[in-house]
Amino acid sequence: MTTRHCDAEIPDSPRPPYPLVSGYCDITCGFGRGSAELGIPTANVPIEELSVEFNNLSLGIYFGFAKVQAIDKQLSVDSRSDGTKVEFNYGRYLSKEKDDLNVLPVVLSIGKNPFYGNNFKTIELHIIHKFNKDFYGAKVKFCILGYLRPELDYTTKEALIKDINIDIYKSLSVLSKDSYKSLGSLLDD
Ligand code: ADP
Ligand code: RBF
Ligand code: MG
Image (cartoon, rainbow, N blue to C red):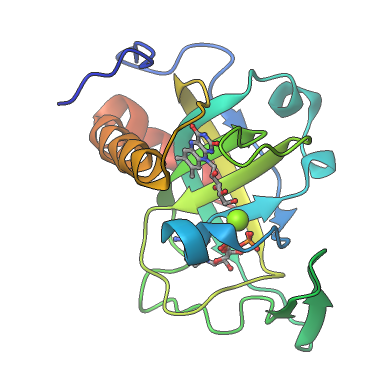
């Protein structure tokens, strides 16, 4: 497996403060860059909905599991700060048969996206699963099981995409070990 200078050592099983388990959080909209620019969508969750343990974590890239839940609400439209419109469907197209509602592996970015120069922190989840449609307004519950690396600046978009793909590969590899995989049950209701 590729080893990068920035890679943290990942223990054989999660060590405190992990596992950290969230409640169900709202999926809000960001700038829409994840899918459009990187081809890597991220479900953004409001940091205010997370406990102090989550908010005290160092900025960086993490892995764990996530579970999405639809809510029963009428479609609505919200506007991004740049005026573009986003349809909130609250997860009505999520499919149990397609495993969309399962406990799924996730990579998370907690940070200020230095490549884009944000001046505020976001918590974004890229769920490692192919969804057929977006699910703005749905809820997501997740656990963090470990830390991968600090967030970095890049000179090209391609270099960022390459690193995210390594993050995904590494996370899937760790999450397949029994000591990590068994913790998916933390998200059972
Ligand atoms: P935004 O900046 O509004 O968060 P993104 O381009 O990051 O826009 O897209 C995020 C949206 O894409 C999520 O809110 C979710 O509805 C949808 N989505 C589709 N596939 C995934 C996935 N695998 N992981 C996370 N979100 C996904
Ligand atoms: N943004 C950065 O500026 N630097 C990073 O090192 C970085 N790593 C990321 C790793 C993962 C696994 C994910 C899902 C996102 C990462 N991002 C990073 C955030 C990325 O810039 C952001 O998701 C998009 O701008 C869409 O909001
Ligand atoms: Mg996003």
